[in-house]
Length: 170
Image (cartoon, one colour):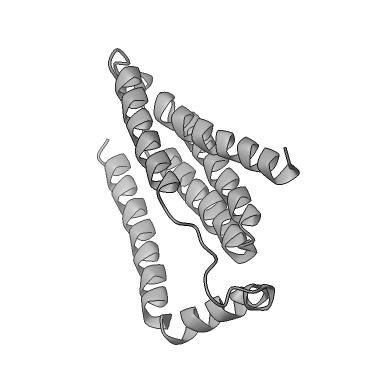
């Protein structure tokens, strides 16, 4: 048993556990914390895949910005404890069944996929993947990149305006 396998096992358990806790908890703040744990462990899995840039982006964008944005939205809206209490009678079994089916499909796909070395994948070509990614994003995909940032900004402003209007009615 190598250290990489042990790190993968721990990170994958954290990822799956955080996702399961996220759908199991009834309080929204606990859900966001579980989601943050899931995002951080996914970033750790990216580090194991030697995709450091994607891991750092995962931490900055998802673990940081999205989680803070979700907490900000929660703070702006009203939540009643009675509204958050959802019937859990069939929710647990249905969630378990969905996760089990998804696991079996992913396991089957991984077992039946030929994982050969890609042509031209050497250590030198993997070392400058950040340069290649940056060049692609800021040359070919600069317009979609900027449109995505504007869309996220408009969504944030819209959420603030909607939350303010709900608070002004009372």
